[in-house]
Image 1 (cartoon, rainbow, N blue to C red):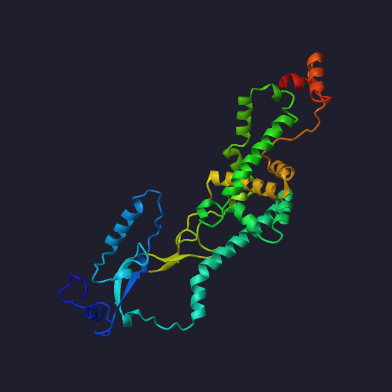
Image 2 (cartoon, rainbow, N blue to C red):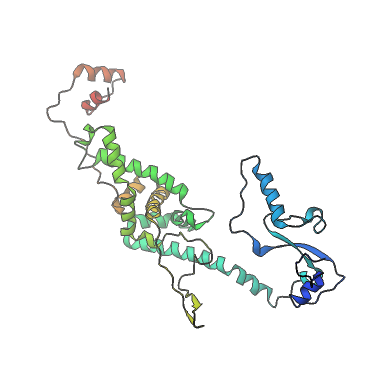
Amino acid sequence: PFPDQDETIKTYYDYFAKVREFEVDASGPLFAVQRQWYLPRKMQRQSNLAMFPQEWKQKSVIELDAPDYVLQGGERSPCDGLVAALLPHDASVEAPIADASLFLHLVLLPQILFHLDQLMTAQLFLDHCLEHLPILGSYLESISKDTFDYILEALTAKSCAMTKNYDRLEWLGDAVLKLIHTDALINSREFKRWVRYLHEGDLSLLRSAMGSNNRLTNAAKSAGFDNFILYKQLGRGQWSPIGMELREINENGEEVLAKQEETKPGKKVSADVIESLLGLVYLHKGFQASYDVASELGITLGRDDNNDFQIPGYKSKNDLLSFSEKFLGGYKFQHPEFVEEAI
């Protein structure tokens, strides 16, 4: 019997003959299937709550709406979340494909174009840096000598829904940038003569202002990084290949060029890419290289390694200095004022 409210449709043979206009064998077997086009856009995730899996399983059985006499045993729910149905044998046979290889390529074409688009973006970004930011460009060229994977990781936002994104490098780059700014405050030509007298809270405020998202975002836009950030995932209406024109049918039945909104990554994303690039350079080239990149991007202060200066009117306490040097095994301090400050 066919589960339908139409009284004229009693069997699966009637359904396919009247609704689908397709002849099937009235005595043929039925196969339990599940409708793939009802696949949910967001799959259920396993929860740590003890009661959740059982409740979700019961909900799935209700959604499938398949009584025991229709689907037997393990045929009930091969894939949770899809609607179950029965199909006659004749309706389950696939039609022959004229060119299976061509069909497979067409199925995979969006993924292929998406991957090529990423590789082209990485190459264009490298060329852009080599032309406009030679220090960063030279480091990235050395890092990407064998693969673009590192550059792609640094440019891929979490919203792109890829296996790898810049989260790990951004976390590292954030710490590197704080160290760069701390070093710059202590050794900067403009601040080093008076910054040592500031309270640590004031120093933290200065460092936070130097690494604010607004400042990093402006630096990313000035460097042109926002044109290379990968933030669109492979999905209908979200991503389209470079240079492809999307067309639609208007109310008059005419084919016209579809309007596409020009979007840019958010401020936080642009700031994160600056930090991810610093993290990438630090990971492969070290601290000095990341400091040079930060200086080239204009997000830090000039460094002065000459610390040979005296505080006007300062008189060292010889007894404290001699005790400290003796305690440290005869070590000689170049700046005795630091000893007093530390103690």
